[in-house]
Length: 552
Ligand code: SAH
Ligand code: SF4
Ligand code: F3S
Image (cartoon, rainbow, N blue to C red; front, side, top):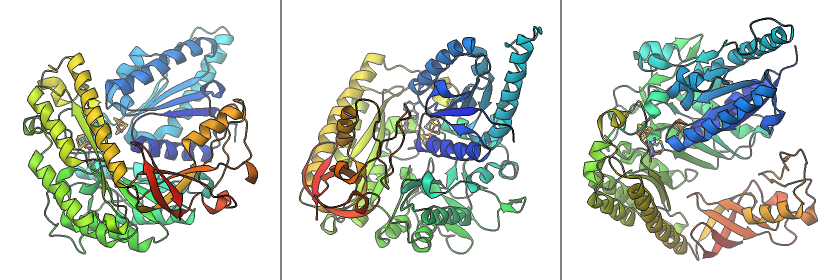
């Protein structure tokens, strides 16, 4: 096999993109590409991009500007844009940034190796032609493009039959060295909700549910490789529903299924049973069939699609985390309706009450923690609407909440139909005000944990400890200790080997409710006996971001 170019891959955006990057990396490494940690060491530079807000795209645009300059000195280099920005901007991106050679949307990533191979050969031959005095020169435009475009919402049959992407998930490499005890597993692709502000249904295409057996098998393989924590991924993860017998088989493999009849809502799924695997069924199957997974969580949940069946499965399954990320987006019914969210504030609050009634058991060391997302300054938001969002935060009492200023996205219906009429300085002020409210609430939620004892999944050195060690290592052999005690090479190529006396004394981990816990490693307790495992820690004090405690 001819030697392959070296590849640098940088990831922006959500967990879905992190997983995609992991799959792409596995695929490229299997083909003989070497991944490198610095763009200037690479012959192929890839950006896996996000389009959800303009800021996310700006970061990529600035990287592409840097690559334009680099390409002037190094014309053979291949630059690829993967993910949601490639899909949203399409060929227009290449017009703006001619340095881009490869465009690959998130639903086409299985085609990436072929695109890269073509792009690499083309660049090489162009450079050779140029050096030999041929007229084609290095500015030639043999761009490699794979985008879903209009096909993303064709009929279910066609879309499902074309979904060779499933093969990418199925071919996932799960060797122990790839994972640090924790992994993502996709259960649903795409989104059908069309919230008016959101670009995701355009970039990720129609909602598709993966066959439950594929998911269980992937969880088992990850567990065999030493993974003990799995986070299931989907844009509306709790909308998962698989109808057996309605599946299409391509090349002997059952394909993901388009979200069909289920309208969501709070009711139980009456078709649940043999013919349908509901989200509740899926959680229970993973919990029962893969007991080596000690922590099972899922993100992101859609407020409208939680039947009590799901909450009861969580309550009755000790290894499913008492953690929900269930964004409200606004506390005003007018705004929720403009956003096309499909629920009212009172329905949202009823759901939180229901979830807490069933799942909040602090006396058993299992409080329910809830995280949210809010958008401020969406079209038409008045002071009163904004006050309603503050009020929602006060009532919801999230452990943390991601707060975003509305960013109009081309291709969404809000962009086309509703004026972005809240001035930037008002958006900024509302964002800061809401952050301040959440900051106080997060602190209060943290203080409530003092005196409680939690099972903590110990991940490695605390951030504080990492910084301290990085500084004392003189910027040369930085330590980035991961679960399992492996020392990972830093970008400068130095590898830090950790001996016992020098092992970090302050460790950090997370509760099943995703609260960060920091504690000191007791003297004489070897690092390997703690990191990567679950241990009991009693909380002695807390601040807004972190709980501090001692091993019991
Ligand atoms: N599927 C998830 C969210 C995916 S996008 C859900 O429905 O909850 C992640 C978050 O980005 C959203 O929850 C929303 O708060 C924010 N977001 C999406 N589009 C946005 C936009 N145009 N401007 C600002 N924030 C946005
Ligand atoms: Fe976007 Fe709404 Fe889908 Fe979430 S549910 S990804 S916010 S369209
Ligand atoms: Fe961004 Fe695409 Fe995820 S737009 S948030 S990377 S689904």
